[in-house]
Image 1: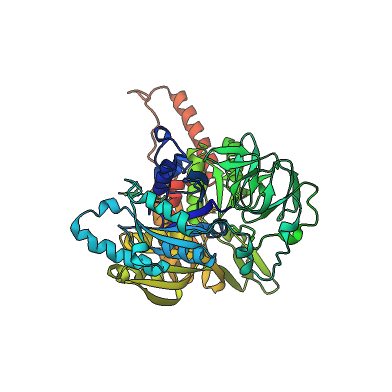
Image 2: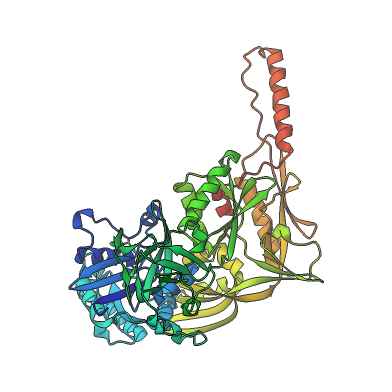
Amino acid sequence: MNNIRNFCIIAHIDHGKSTLADRFLEITGTVEKRNMRAQYLDQLDLERERGITIKMAPVRMEYSGYILNLIDTPGHSDFGYEVSRALAAVEGGILLVDATQGIQAQTLANFRSAKASGLTVLGAINKIDLFKNPEDRETISRLQKEVAELVGSTEDEVFLVSGKTGEGVMELLDEVIRRVPAPEGPHRLFEKNTSTEDSGFSKMNGGGRALIFDSFYDDHKGVMASVRVFDGEINPEQNVYLAAPDTVSKIKEVGYFKPQIRASKNLKTGEIGYIATGIKDTSLIKIGDTAISAAHHPDKIKSFILPGYKEPRPVVFVSFYPEENDDYELLKKSLEKLKLNDSALTIEPDQNEVLGRGYKVGFLGRLHFEITAERLKREYKVETVSTFPSVIYKIKTNREWLTIIKPEELPMEYEEIWEPIVKIAVLVPPKYLQSVYPLQARFRFTDITTETFQDQTEIRAMMPLAELVSDFDDQLKSATAGFASFSYEIADYAKADIVKTDILVAGDVVPGLSRFLPRNTVEKEARRMVEKLKETLPRQQFAQPIQARVNGKFIAREDIPAVKKQLGNFGKNGGDRTRKMKLWAKQKKGKERLQSRAQVRITPAIFKELIKK
Ligand code: GTP
């Protein structure tokens, strides 16, 4: 165990985590130079293209007689719970700060969770290749001071590296070996959670105990659990007990990430690797769960469950419908495939009068939704129509509390609507502080407090989750030229002053366009919606009124004029009269059919336009 180091890289999005990992892979000879490509551990095309890591593969590297396991922490707050589980699996972290950006909100949020998990954190400043002029020295040493202050080290202990050129990277890796502690038993996990007893697992014969920090699906081997072994030894002769679903299965294989999976004889205390669980049903493998192996039926071991497990909870819901009804099966299969590697997704059949059969999908947040929607389109070639993202509302009626997701489910009579609230932290450089103030009212911030963090301001507030998943991210970025950043966590429920707004096209409520909106901005927003719909909806063969309705009252209206008819060319003399009559009759029938249902095709592009503030 003394020659193992388990660590992660903690950073704000785009600060260069994947690129630094590439250099580690090269230096340690884990990936041969001729096979190297940028952001090697980002496996999805989408990740490489957008340069955003959704999931970086874990990797086991061998270097200077040490085994170095690097695992990923997805930087975005949507994945806060997964970050916390990844942090629980390692002893150390590199806090990587982009020299061109400085410390940003997720640098802080992830650093704080790393400290809370008891990790040893090394500070490093990245992209140093861009600061080679003598006048840059001051900027860098100021940032070095800030990072040192944050991690609690001296300034010289903050590394200056370039993931691009490789400068300083080897020294950083040497420091990981020196400073990150060798793997320890699970006591670090238990300390925070004294209610759970860790009663001498190591005395058990021949088994092992591990924390599942990720899961994925292998076409040949089925459901795989990425694990950190905390005690004992796990090998393929054993059975594995999964605590959360209370299931036992015969292990098929165990192994390491090199970074491709490579079978091994066993996984020992302190090691990171995978267990091919032999389980077919992906929903049984849960992030944060405990896997316990034993030679015999793993019976009396429920008392050894590692603390910290939470059922992944989707908080944002969007319904997807195939643009072509025939694609329903394709949509279904594609979502099921996506779910294989993304245990946080929930999918459930859904139905919409206009859009037909589809699926209601639950996400961890807005980014999670956007990525999934894009993957459906790109990797699975399913064109879909989707509804507004919704959250889980609690409705108080005179008799009971109801939980609803779709505004359509709101009962006629109710007393109060309660909505989920997040705790948000926005980090703003002084120059942009003024530009952030208007957003506070617009996105319904409450309980605002501010604090100075070095030379920046940290604004903390409560904010409805529904506002966060509208376009807060984009608005904050554009107001501050990308310099302000935020992190959030789900907090609680609060009574909301919101009303249900329906959108009607040609007199019919368009299911999926109904929304809850704050009472004081509903008129403005309703107006914007109908205007936007007028612009974006294609003209039909008949004129269509677009209306917005709140509590039975129409509050906005626009009309889409009919398309000018093109009857076709019947020649100078009017052509053949019977042919013309036939065509008219056919068009009339078509028109009736069209009019019988609101022909609203809201593509994801239109949808994205519509949800912008
Ligand atoms: P997420 O996975 O989205 O959090 O991003 P990341 O932290 O993995 O960042 P990534 O490695 O994708 O790098 C972000 C951008 O910065 C890319 O365009 C990189 O090419 C660039 N970059 C990374 N490291 C360096 C560096 O040391 N110097 C320079 N000049 N650019 C770098």
